[in-house]
Length: 123
Image (cartoon, rainbow, N blue to C red; front, side, top):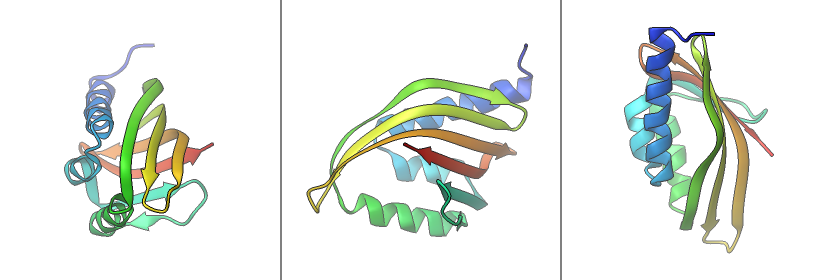
């Protein structure tokens, strides 16, 4: 099945986001690609709503990170309609001595070149 031009553009933007994440540039990725009224979901937790709130929450987490070991894509990205999907592994350490490894599928809905809704399914 062929992808539309819109779907190809979303795949390109998804790849740009992934490249920033792989470099540990989480804030830059969020500043560039989140819509002002974005909704971000961690698993089944309630949504974090709004770009500014999401940026503040991400910065709180990043302030605890002592070592970033990478963001590796396992599969994807794939696209269907206004939604992209990919599977990734992220690893980092925090200042409480915890080593974190998140295996996740990321489902992202796009509108006008911005992320409007994103959910991280963790294992």
